[in-house]
Image (cartoon, rainbow, N blue to C red; front, side, top):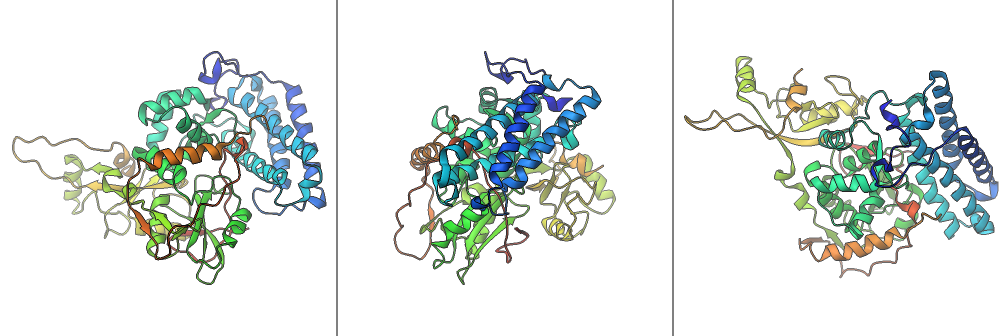
Length: 498
């Protein structure tokens, strides 16, 4: 019962002096009543909720149904549900967020029916949290049952870090997580820590689950430069929009409809772990796409070269991300002497892609770890298959790699060691609302003094002034949805559909 994360009474989920509040059937019943009341409030025709993610009229009933399923399955299996750490934290948070949403309706009154009002915006942000909570609960309790064994993170380095630091627990308190992460990826406590928490803690419960960390590491890959990527793409990049939905991106980009190349990017809520990029086309249309099988910085750089992504949030200066694309940042896999000799006997080489036998392997499928070339991977995925061509494991992500060929050592010289282990073997065989946006802006200003890298200036007049950004409330510690889009600035792209 790894998904449970241990006994609920375990102190602090890793935080000294803290105890996870116990829950029981009465807590479940109260939470169900809150969700039913919220669903009824959302059904008011005057609210006019659009049927596009995150859609509360689907999220609330689905959350209620999954909660009831988990409880029912636990009864049938006679499992100590009330002692499972993850379930206790999840249930308390679900109850709290449902109460918070009901309070927004009560205090907002008629302003709830005004689309751009603060209460309405807060409800939208909460809908994102509900979306993330449901995705997490389904991942850790698939079909209502605890995940079979420890939750496996997509990125092997991230998975190893989690297992080494937290064993088979499915979530830990932020203070515990922060301490462990800082040992391998250093960051400053204070503003930087608060900003990082707001990015990782998608469900706003002061804990980090294996699921949430999986999403974060997929978004800001690769692992060796994880927090450098996060700083460049989330903290200091003007195109990053942490808490906008698909519809809100369209509205925000509408004012730049006469400026083709204006763009924004955000977390997709329909495909967590992937980015959605919205941009203005040459004819003034607004499209949104999900770049597939590549880090975000590569997609943005390609889009810049092709003239699609020129002006982040309509500004005339586009950050240079080339420092994130250095070969040294890629994972290197060194061919061993044994592998070299084995493939020589077969008249081939380890680095050659096994599918086309023409190009070298340059991408790793995750989480299974199999290697092939980008060309074959794209062709395979475009055939509507979302599984690995070798083992049929689900393709949850990819990572660029470099295979270093084996060079027979000169006499008396060391053979050296492999840079990356394991992959080739697999190949073989309310109160918590907080002004996070302010934190991000302050941190960005401090970071900008350290980031002296050049910028890619578009052929336009001097930079326009930065438009004011509405304050982020805690529930804003989330990322957003992903939707429609026809046409693609680079391949392969996932066209977002409503």
